[in-house]
View 1 (cartoon, helix red, strand yellow):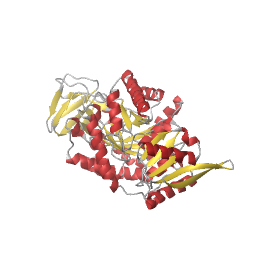
View 2 (cartoon, one colour):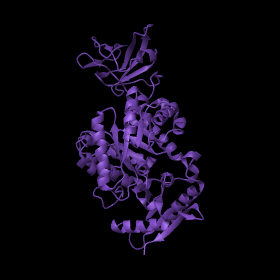
View 3 (cartoon, rainbow, N blue to C red):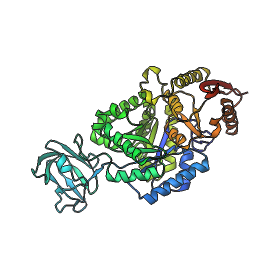
Length: 491
């Protein structure tokens, strides 16, 4: 059964509802470190496909599943596809300073002999850009504008409008440029096949531009006919994705506000507003949403975060994010466990300010809802738990939809979600306020489920005399399944 959210686990705050995603890297790849990170609060581990060979990634999956079995705790895995990330080629001497008003050229190839002739990993760049387009380098610290283009598309000449130093292999962003490359690259297709073979729970698609990108990824997944279909996480990091947000939300399973490239593609001052707008829209549509990038970045080297970072994490929680994600902090940082505990502490402090969702604000379509009776029962369960000041909501679920319905309502009372399907338990690791527990007790009656919870609560010292439990379950009567809500007071 899950340790996530349990107060008796060292380092984990009591019933923290915001999920924590941690990127795995050299600093966190050992079984011992993975175990410590889960105990400290990690619900999902992220595999960054921009780094690492398949043999290493396979070892990571094996270790994560080993830790999950040892702790008897569902742990999700997110495979983050690289997408069409554009990088500079080799620069003579390794770097060059771009003075304001200087003129550079982009030429084809991966290396140049002249420091003012630049190359990149995306060969169609020369074909796709046109005069007036911006080219941003080194995380947006250097900016150029295209002046002219060779008629034969052999080069484009650019004018530096924001000075700075650029280095070989640094990132290139083309805000507003319609790229001719597909969102799912050849490398992504190989990585996707590996992820499906290894039964990964979530697939992150980088640099999504439009809903068609998600539809194409779904088509590719269906073509492999996997035993378990992973949930797709659309990473919103391009202005085109922001413009097509509603259509993307209509086809994706989850969303990531990827503030790194989003802060380069869009005006950096807009990022906080875009974050709030995306989270609010996802909350309305019952779509899990992740907030990512530089959340506790200074803790890669420092033992404590800055005040601004703490405020940033807290604001994301108050905005309504389902999960917060750590990248370099846990992948290559010096203090992986401390950074997860800090994230957990910040979420615990901020969550009392998360307001319960108004039923009038939920605008999701039929495909995202549980059955109408289940919807009514879950809403009644949240209302009853608040009125009675209950200690726990317990739900039995086969697909996870009932747990998601409870999660979306953002109730004060923690939810224990029981399922007998491993893939569903791992998916629920992304649901705000839900602690998934894998057990066959869901195949039995509501009374059996309640008896199990009472023994479980006693064993973990979570329930005492007078504790109130709301059970959302089912009973079989005349061969039909009926949803029910039951209130139990511990003797």
